[in-house]
Image (cartoon, rainbow, N blue to C red):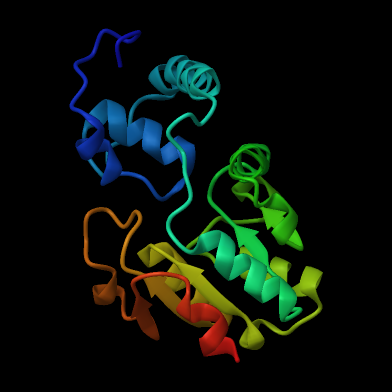
Length: 192
């Protein structure tokens, strides 16, 4: 925002716009609106600025939510295949997972650039299921946004939502997942 000469509204404002990939986030940040659209010229100027700023931070404030690593470790010991399906680009997803030290827990990582359509499309779930050699109906999607719930429903998969994370500032229960949990510690128990 500084490089574009625009006022910065603060982190709390931006948190409610996260969830549909960096392209949508750039439009939202500049227009300050969830459905905002900037011209192609403005986007083409802002996109490299956004990525340069992202790389310069090296995920310094990115950290795992409680119980994530323990959950992944437990699922691995149960021999449950795991996929990461994200609306980030795949390379960015790898960077974040590497930074957090959890990339090795995933059988496959699929970013929005690895599938025909990003979430809420079910394409990522279908692709992940194929990699893991399971039917989508046997996939449990664990997510934090309405896009995760919609993707799971469209794929015929079950979906559990966490009560924290990014969902445009809206309570995730309004998206009607199969259940809402406060931490991931209960996931291995649910599967067992």
